[in-house]
Length: 492
Ligand SMILES: [Zn+2]
Image (tube, rainbow, N blue to C red; front, side, top):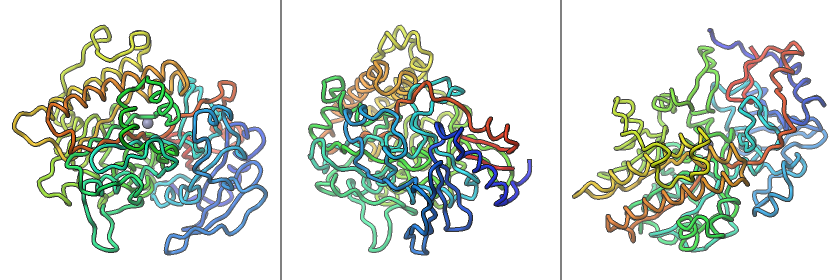
């Protein structure tokens, strides 16, 4: 392996000819690239746009040829379950790509950004990923939109409100809820793309403790609907006492797991915090980097950019003496207690019970589905760890506790977002949240706690009929390609 050579425009044109041709149109929504610093192009089968970034960060569309693929950037589209389901696998002109220009621009700030970033269509079903019905990763709004619900001390009580933000806004907002202040003109984290989401805050500094739950891959319209129908009483309690953002919190491109866990926990885009994707090519060495796999979770933060603070670092800097906790989360830098720190030290948590004895696990799915079982056991261990850290007698509960639940992602992928399996995963996760609430009550600090639920991306139902692989078509056309993390194309 050696450093990747710079791309010639001739090779790029050849690849684009194939990718944007009629054969791949059903699976390729659009392709983005950066032909020169601060210059970007996005192309689709029926048009393209070129835009630039000024030194102050302002993005300007310079030219459009045919249909601008990013013409629609409405953050409110498909803002309830009915409208989402009425337009299954929306095509480009029916879809919406909020913050589309900024989404591509941040990506190409990373030194190992791909030569071409392929966005799959809403209908595309990855057969080599096991033919999952639920998909994410693209720029389309259903795949980008994660839920964001907050409640408790200092948090506004607006119920299900017609508001929304971005995942990069979560960390600055949590810091404000805790009462952190920054000097005029300075940001609250060392590097910050996000902003404080003011509508959520009723009384800054009122909360003494914040507990954040990540429901990986949970579709917000489905989550709100289940909560309102009584299938997730603890989520419903937070929605009733606090605020649920109807338009959710939008993930950064690529809308995949570890890039956006890290976006939530650093307030920065993947192109800036360094965890570019679940896998990519390190251009300097030509080596493949894999961050989001069981073998690499514990060490994935070696790729976090130096100088990037996590929420853990920032809380401890703003509030000397504060203690923070990271449960089941690869993005754990700066936490005082972390599941993956224990793993790095060879201290594996006690194995959870098997499927027959596992609490809060829907029997119908936990027995037959290997993924459902694995994730249920991991999430049960998360509850055990929470209760053990929070139950330590004589110690003050942590200022910030982050709990990563994975079952929702497994189930929403496998069954699709509207499936009974997805609903069961929400009910099981809700029950685990209930056990954590009981522990918070036992600690006697409920009234000083703020809570939030978020996810790392959305989940969209794909069309099992729309399959195929652009890599194979490129190779058949004589274009050599390395495709990492799916959709990150490097042309060697
Ligand atoms: Zn995920």
